[in-house]
Length: 117
Image (cartoon, rainbow, N blue to C red; front, side, top):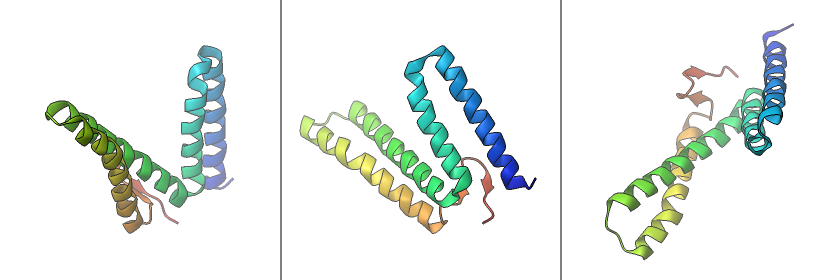
């Protein structure tokens, strides 16, 4: 059995056990974890597509966190906060996708390894 099939089989077993555990514990969390497991599986099967999704999510969350920090610390009018709420997460998403495109979405410093395609 080559290494890629072994990784796919291991990912399938771990995903199946995780979903079974979540179903037995709390149904409310199952859909969100199924979404996350789907992204992780997609990243394992197609690193460029999964990498783009991860970069987009991280950029959006980074922009959203920056919006919350600036919105809470700076005394800004309500209209400026509304504009920030719309612009910064999308700016973070675009910057993250641009940064990921330069590395072909395969360099993930978050995990500390590089895919060999």
